[in-house]
Image 1 (cartoon, helix red, strand yellow):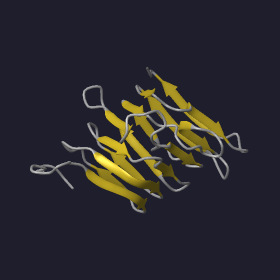
Image 2: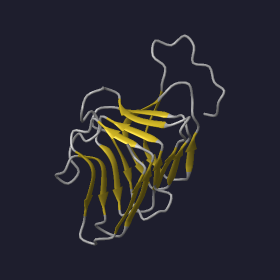
Image 3: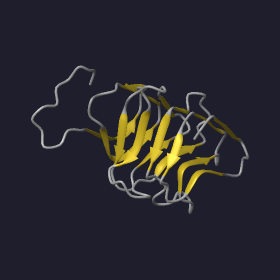
Length: 170
């Protein structure tokens, strides 16, 4: 869906999505939010445009696999919002990076709200980094994590190969 589009005359307006992403994909920003109804599993790179809003149904997650990457690079004027469809702590699971060592794992000018629901490996976290089968990398800048029902960021694994850059966050 590339803008411009018309969303008039609906009881509720959102773009429903979820499931497996197997090829590099870019989501454009729209006047209405994306509603992630099922877990979003990334085996390729998903790039979310500045100004986008993604709302997550109850206990859904973005699962970034070893071959996948998640790029959400907003701007000061057009941040990206990742939030629960319900505005309660732990409404959705959050972002899980499983041994994804991609340099394209970037969260910049992102507000991540109401995550940290059901646990990843026994730990609730808005962002969960697991290096169980290889290194994991994430750059997190100019972003805010609020209303998590667990840790903001949790690192786990046996490899001790987490590369996490955190800078200029609120």
